[in-house]
Amino acid sequence: MPKIKSVARSPHVDMTPMVDLFTLLLTFFLLTAVFIPMEPAQITIPVSVSAKAVPDHNIMTLYIAPDKRIFFNYDNGQDTSFHYRIQLLEEMGGRYHINFTPAELKHFSNAGTFGLPMKDIKAWLDTKNAKDAEQLQTGIPMDSLDNQLAWWVRLGRTVNPYAEVAIKADGNVEFPVIKKVLDLVQSNGVNRFDFITTYDKEEVGLKDLPK
Image (cartoon, rainbow, N blue to C red):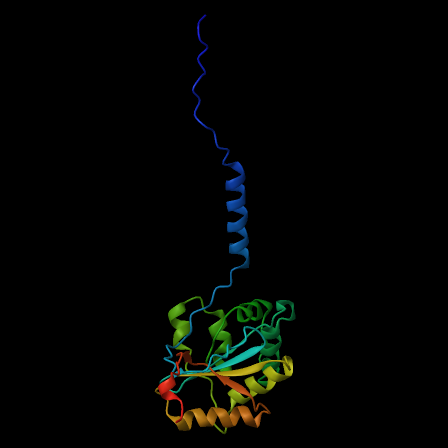
């Protein structure tokens, strides 16, 4: 009686579910990713041993560059439907008699950190040339005759009362400049703020304990 030979078949793996899952995950990460815009000045922050994390939302950040230029950032809050940045720019426009178009307000809402006088902010929002936009970043005025930084902080607290203040200063900035910013912040009713530093874990051994 002849033997029946089984037909050798290569195993078949259906990759369709895996490809569908990969596509869904890729779409999810692309839609939910938050891209951090580049900062207009390179700031080397000092080292500290504090481990407290700066909040991601409800925060305004004051940047102090090595050349003493002051930059400002203001987040839209955890619920971006509030459009805090747009409200803040409208408030500042009312203060300095500047009307912004809907396109300029939308651009500002996603623009990130900035540092320039109010008279240049429309040109900064309207320019398509990155080099021209960078040249306008001369720092926010904070002198006694035209203290625009104080108004950004003051109106920022008005638009979002939950906004905390963080200061990111270059390690080479002279202390009088930092003190001037601290005085400005405290004069606007902010007595609690964070300094952004690089975390350096410090371990304590038995030999470090007092005898």
